[in-house]
Length: 636
Image (cartoon, one colour):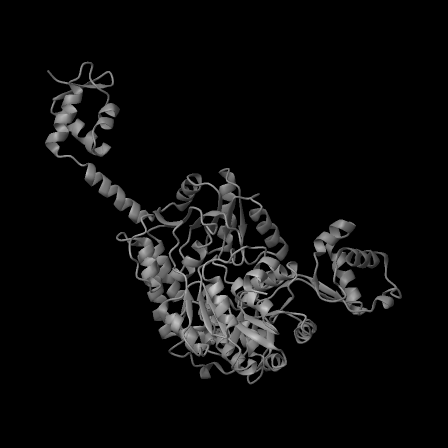
């Protein structure tokens, strides 16, 4: 089958988007390939289509665990077999997924980067027939990037175990020229083969509005536009507060952040996708992998720390190619807020060492122990136990990760799932109480594929359907697990820490220059670029962004707020008349029988209204004009 035939068969599309086919053909020809496609450009199809055409398994490395699950579910809905691997899975789940890959029952295998730290898992991968290695969010491999992750550096090892003839496809939505070069160097590209779509979006207007009281400006923006909208903020608490404020003002809205349960997330996403809710107020956890083409407005209530982040989030507007707006609401306080993020992201090195020591104590890991072990890590309890400030503490854990001492995986919420492990003929011999029998029968009747794989379940829905308490359902499923009838994995929200070296004494910790000082300098430059974009008052906002991403713009966009202001100024300059002519024109009109209204005179004269009004006032003060009964007349 050809790529277009695969596309039509599994996705129902008649044609590819720009550059998709070129990237696919490059990969199928065995070339290492770097694809720079903006948000909404269809990156996933550039590896999913080849995966259906190549023998063996396509290995996809992605840091977005929640997105990984969604993509696997979406592929399964299309009849495409896929599995995923991350540290939140049980050993049984990992073994089952590996077996599927070996037997040719999975075409795509999604892998989180921290799994590549596990030597046993790497050894298991050697037995898989890998045909293509895909690195999604490839900017994470570059130390020049805004979201560098040390675990990504292990990806190069995949080339060794897969064989030199297996091509690598690296994908990202935003990368500067330095990051682009670093990606290809880190992934050991045999040749430079880059397919890049311009960062310019012709249908998207970038606008900055300034307001110290942002709620009033937000309401004005929403009331002056129509259609589906996203509002980005940086605080979970603020998502709820703003959504509630909008509801009080009669604007349909909801809120979304990473701390919600999977059921709540799905319900909110589905209502928004179905246009039951117009506005979603969210942290940057919202939008990844959500393919809603008709978003007409994206508002940044809080400024992101880099143009890379801003571009990706703003780019979720107007994916259908129709007119859309990306609006920043900025205040005079935002500059200092951005600057403070540098200090929050790079706390004092002694504080970093202190956090490392306390984390070891909290997890009960002895000095010299812990190497390769995964520990569940309750971040909120950790900060509360040791009275630590959350923001710099989280930054310290990220810097310890970049320094190679741990792998801190931030909050991931896993859905409840189960698999029937007892043979069908053995189920009849189970002696169960009434409630457990009801729960088990409900599960067997309403969920398919339970005997072959883990299936996601919803305990609340089961409880409501059976008129039982959620606790009763939970205990029944645990009891069935103890009987070895099923393997039940309850839902949990689990940040975790993996020790990538044995625990050290704090005095021996070295925070490298590249991780601390140089990364701090890079963050300062990114924040300066964000400030320049948001607060610059000259030129064109789109061109400011394009130059940051290494493009040389040929002309101004003509659509951003700066370009529109320039157009208005030019029109006023074109329509401007000299003072003498303006005076004569006003006096001529006012001398007509019965006089003329101010509005009539403004409409008849080709000059800005405020200029005409100022001249009228001047003539009234000089008693050359008279104003009576709403009309201007010339004094005799």
